[in-house]
Length: 95
Image: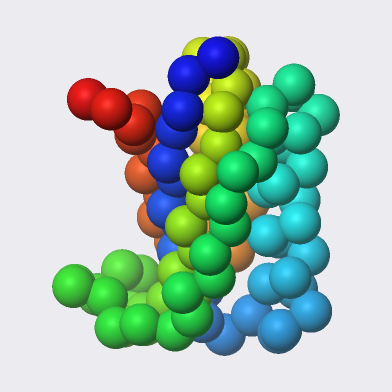
């Protein structure tokens, strides 16, 4: 298993319970695929470096996990089809 770091940005206009639901859903994707979540840090609302779809702020979440390569593919697929996600980036740690 390899160590990965994923940061994703959620739309700031989502309700608090919807944000919590999405964070739990993304954790579940990692767990269901056999990965192990090591750290989750909700960084809160921050200003974006540039405007995305008319939005200037986002809710940032940083997630560290250990998993196989196919887990990251599934996680990114779920990010792409989820409406509340503005941006995401997954990198392998140690490179």
